[in-house]
Image (cartoon, rainbow, N blue to C red; front, side, top):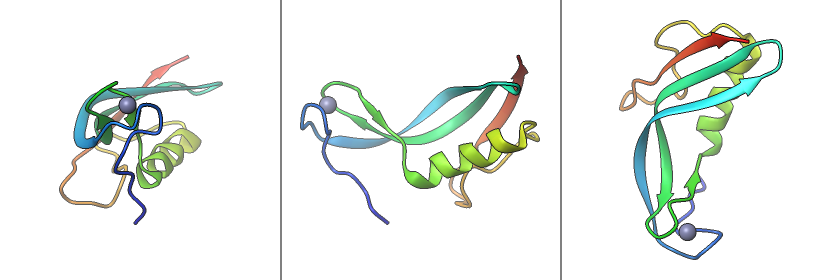
Length: 88
Ligand SMILES: [Zn+2]
């Protein structure tokens, strides 16, 4: 899969980190909070980059509107992401 190695903003080196919470707001759904989201983060400016797989996983959950507990963002056993909904 395509993977960035350097930051598009400052050119700093990216490292793999897991962010505790990432929230996305969607009209008529509310705010969906994703837990333990794998991202790449710039060591210099802390800009975060989400992979296409993770963004697709989030989009699937947002389209459904009601994430079940322990919704899998990506089918990678190493990550047990969780998603929950705060209604609008
Ligand atoms: Zn940067």
